[in-house]
Image (tube, rainbow, N blue to C red; front, side, top):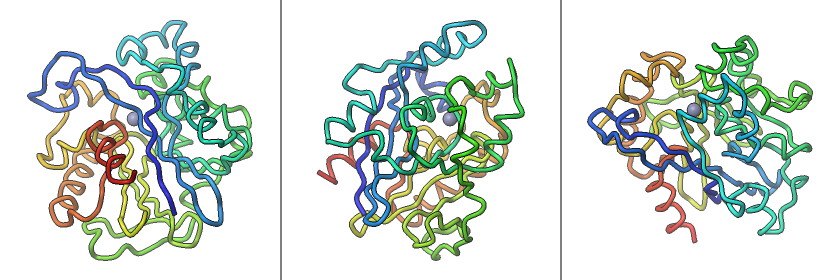
Length: 277
Ligand SMILES: [Zn+2]
């Protein structure tokens, strides 16, 4: 199996929110998308990053606050569809999209792939659907980004067979085997958002663990640092979030051979690209 990481827009945010002691000056955080090529299933996406429709969805109030809080930048050539087209991949060629969680910067591109099956957490979808108005907005949901036929095209992670992870993934032990061939192992990383999952895969002999927003940058893996308390507003569960960070930091400490990639970490992205090109 093959994996490319694509940089699909970025947002600006003070580092101090993400790590205590960080600078308050706004910093650039990429939205990273995983493009897998599976020998039997074809193309599989991990999230979609930003899309231009994020701007329309955040035009009215109160959704406008979302854009003020995390201003988005997406140039034309960075659009996911454009990057795929440049490689000769059409929208219809994307057969599966794995959704780590339902925050707007991960699902803004779903509407561009009308032929894909969505793979997501059942509890993640339910929590998003239950929230409306301000409560949805505070948790980072923009419902206009959701395809109307989503429920007809979804397959839930929780219905996949359970998979016992090898000891070198400790303290993580349980995963879901999405395609029943061991190629895509979904691991719950709770706390950032409801039903938040990462994806463990083997790429050319290397274990690659895409962890979504379980932490924002790799610095957190080294220091197990906590975000600013302001970030707690958005999190689904602060204690679970801290627990997930500690587990990832442990895994990182025990086993440097697993490549852990947070969705918004520029240096992880750059190192992966340098290694896999
Ligand atoms: Zn998120």
